[in-house]
Amino acid sequence: MPNRTRHYSSLRVDKTTKRGTFRGITKSKAARRIELYGIANKLAWEQIPPNQKNERPDISLRLHASIRRQLKAGATDAQDIAFEALKEALVPEPHS
Image (cartoon, rainbow, N blue to C red; front, top):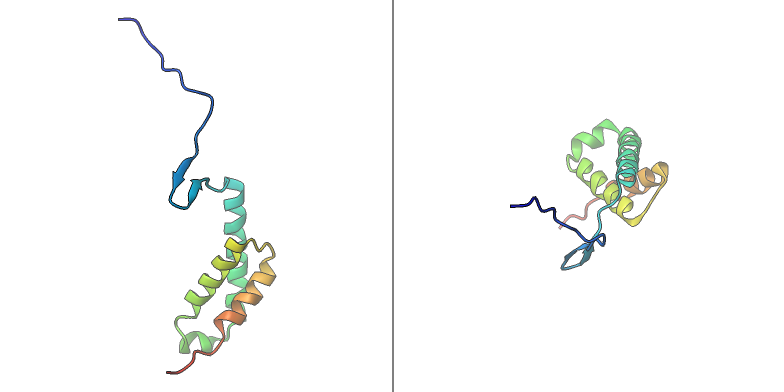
């Protein structure tokens, strides 16, 4: 039996999901987001006083969520991201 090679079309079809086509971000964009996240998180974390870190253990989660939200929205300046994350994380919780 002869050795047969498969011939694939040069056209690639993007995988689809319920939300549309699945196109991952490039490695360079992912690396830039990771770098921005680390810098912004460090800047924001250093500005929080130790007593607030102890009083509100969820503050790190709030910073994380805020920074991720801003990066997904396309923010590119680490200082602006950190400042906005601090404003969101330090807002006092309403007591029910």
